[in-house]
Image (cartoon, rainbow, N blue to C red):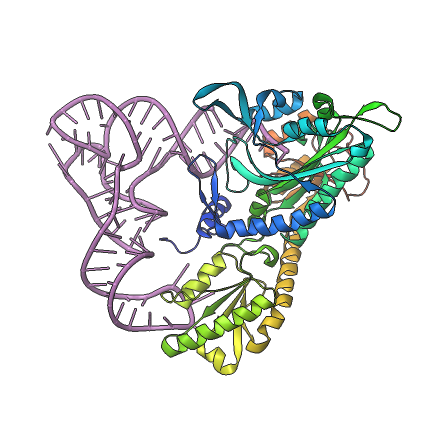
Length: 478
RNA sequence: CGGGCUGUAGCGCAGUUUGGUAGCGCACCGCGUUUGGGUCGCGGGGGCCGCCGGUUCAAAUCCGGCCAGCCCGACCA
């Protein structure tokens, strides 16, 4: 690389992001427009998120399954809103085995339709409910403006699909999934998300109600990083998902679907990163600690041996650690590289440290300078140091979010607020009013926060009485 | 999908105006040097100049088409 580091975040956020994901070796460009190769360093983060969420999903009684990626086009066309919402972004296979297919196959953009077909087959009685399915899969949406992690043509996700006897049970499920996502975002990704419902215009194609978690990125925009939908009986009606209730009547099931994708990693990058590069929350960092041995000749052998021993102790203490023993690179180069790649804690072991029985510790951020800790206590102290770092990132992101969120009462103050953060506003709920706001400022209603207090007012834009019974969050989004 | 910009070594770029067989920095390889915040020297290797076609004795350079990337917009669980 000819330049050292990436374009500063403060100078050009978008350039910063694009350069960083490549330079930090999270991803490389795929050969097809909008696709990405997730490299081991990036994939490890995904695996860590995945392992946690998969645990939550199984714990709550869901079973993992895997449905085919090819969906008959006719399935797709059954639910009117669903077709309309997804048609423009479908990839369709029309030729296979050297022949034109009789029925084109849609490469799944989401699996409500195939799974609906099988739910219909598998559900007969109220005793078959609830049916709780999940799958980890790749999906394809032909997006016009791709961006690594945030909107790629093909992406990885988890999609939960469940069927229930009634609305109450289905809604309980919908809210369970939302809670799981919020927990994952807060506890692993250290993103202080806001939970709540989407306004009708932002709903999933075919859903009755859509819930979301929204995080604030460091440029003040919002990122939707997980959604949960109550589908009512919309899909049950078109796929014939029916069951016999206790009275012997044939009734439609109520279904839900919910998804969390590799987009969450984009959220991590844009929530915590800074001018120097990535800052990774320890709980999803591929390497929580990197040890850099320093010195040459006899000193190099001594420090390398000490680094290996310490790495062994850290591993036994449950810490993901990497020893950077590349002999041709000087320490300063390594420091900068690991900072760009976001490693939370760096330990330097040089001859001076060994002589003093200490190791030099440098945190990726949160304090000035370095400190020495006793070499023989490093492994025992490290889990606590990492927990503190994790908590620090969450608090810092929360403070940033709160400092960039404000109540806005009038149209005058609005453009300015959404140019750098979120606006809490009363809105009339009318689509034409939303459209006008979007045309002027690019801001859209992000979420009706679940925990906002009951309040009424007048729409900041048009002066009509407010909808939703509370303030909603407005922002520019990804 | 509309408007703008850009495709030359792994990365960043010069060369294109005025056609003449490709260059710089970093990275890479070898030897030496250096090692507590992006060492230094010497010697090397690496190119269908995005792709296809046209004009020409001759094309990175001129013309046409296509593809890809970036920015803005529209679209977008």
